[in-house]
Length: 413
Image: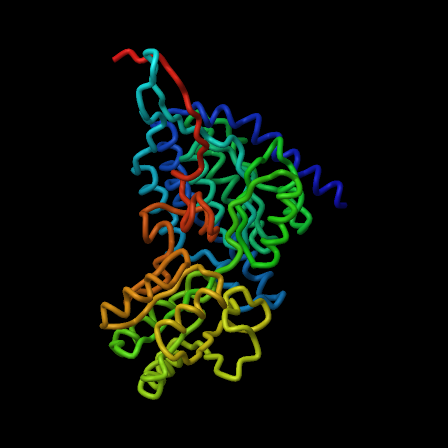
């Protein structure tokens, strides 16, 4: 069985590699038209997509999937319309400059930087059907072929999206429809196979639960495959002594509008100086939203990511801190480093928190839910990279999915 799964993944990689030149050579007009056709087909194939998703959701519910993860899995009419709108906006977004002048060199030469597609990029992601469209659209815009592998719970929805939306749109503009592949196997071994094909899929985007993603990253490294990993999430909000409690109440709602996403409120830190005053406001908001707080003494690490819990309902961890320094320290040392915010009317306190927090996104009187490619940058994302090394960090979009090539040419100026 393992050999069959590995063979299926390898066949996807080989098909994508054969189709990659067709996508790499496509004109900007063809690329943007393909994205627009995808948006149109989300409308014309609405009933087919929603029916496939309903089947996935029904099975997952029978299997006992938690409310937070069911929320990730579900495509609603509104979300489908949002997916189409994002595709149209992406189609209207400028393409990156493919050749950038750098300098003149001795001997009548000049140096330019060329930005080229990687070739084939893989993606392993959780049971979120919208991510199939998000990643496929980013790959198409960046002219990279792709091999997508999603969680078994969303496989039916993803297959319908590929067959009825993505592949036909590519074919309509003359791009090889095999440029975007979806691994047809539900077995977990498919993920390991995807990060073991350096000659076919040299770069893989990893999204999902922390330990699973870290394990795949180690397997990839052992096979000389590079990764862009989004292993952990969980937003932090620190309620400072000078916080406006009405703003805090509002932040509770905007931070918890969805429970199954990585950037929602996960850890709430309340300054000791205002804890007694702030807690009733926070507790009331959580009660209205329908989210249970996890209070001391905690039976889990402070940064435990509730959005990925398949057995218990999504929760918010609440803890007391003595001030800005401790709040930033907890956010740095005990969470993933995805995003943290401070609620305060004291500008100096906000600046101190911004300087002390080393994570990917930092917010002042704003929800960490804004750490999202579309909300921040106006385009879908392939994931949020938390690496603390040079390279793409934060929401990764089509502008990041390239490799540099230096070219030396005669200087004709």
